[in-house]
Image (tube, rainbow, N blue to C red):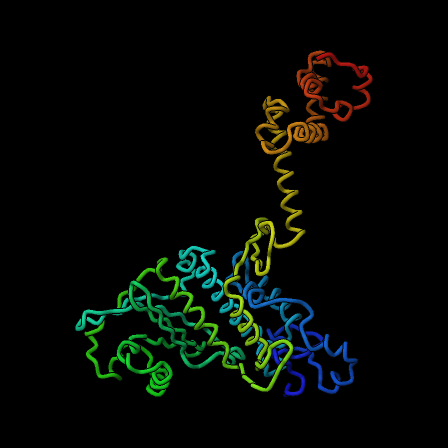
Length: 432
């Protein structure tokens, strides 16, 4: 199916809806060119762009590798994202959910890298991922060396068609020396590893020529690379290294390489002037999402809901710190805190604490009279306290009920804690 007449400059394919089939396939009900042209101009404009604002970070949050996410929840989130985005890869109205999962996973990796580069997360969070490999390459004969960071992005299905087949290579320099970073595409069926020593062996060769040479030679590992360049294998030593704070510039370069790997489907038309993309056009909506992500790298940030742990995007958020993924979760958290405070105040009261002592312990930042009124209301509505008072009165009588006297002395609403029969016996007057 061709989308030449319907696909927008952003790579968005207008559609009516999407169905997640039992065989793990997303089937989109796309609009034909005739349907678009027959629509009113205002309606056509609405059909030709997503109905809400989302970005690559929202796709990343659909990954099973996101905190507090699992496979079933991730599928549900991906399906919800598909209902907004339409076809992601730009070539068919049918796309596998598996390919979407791979795309979301790489988006999550990129988000993690940028959070570290922005200083929003510690370098230890990348170590925990286990996705970024660092090693020191030493030329024992020349007595020099360099660091190398690499990451492999796994692809499958339709996702394979929108990721560059050529390894992305970047070089960074700082006071500590030179570091090279590389991003290689690992197809699910062919997990090869590209040893970066080739850069050191061909330092006079520019990146594009080196990439072509590697592809032509079919280089799969360091031994083959060394043989290709006719250098003694024992001359070069590879030492695994730990990521550290000094690697942040290289991590930023690694992130830019991952972005570049997703921009093969971007074209420049010097004479075009699209409203959304200027003189750029995108073969897939995924390419647009990566390009849009690249324009806002300094603002990449993810928060985690304090109530359910679900991650959420903080891009564009201003004002007070956001702590919850939704208003409902914020309400749930408030109710949970109130419930915990209520249970604690009741427990403390039974242990002999006064209302004033409970207020000082549980509500140190709340105005004293307001907090005391809250504690008294919680205790006065407590059914268990009512039963305890009734049992004690039945056992020792009203005059000897210490619990009843405490409730009166602390200003609790005795009419809610003593039934009508007991109130009549007390005659609504108890002397502490």
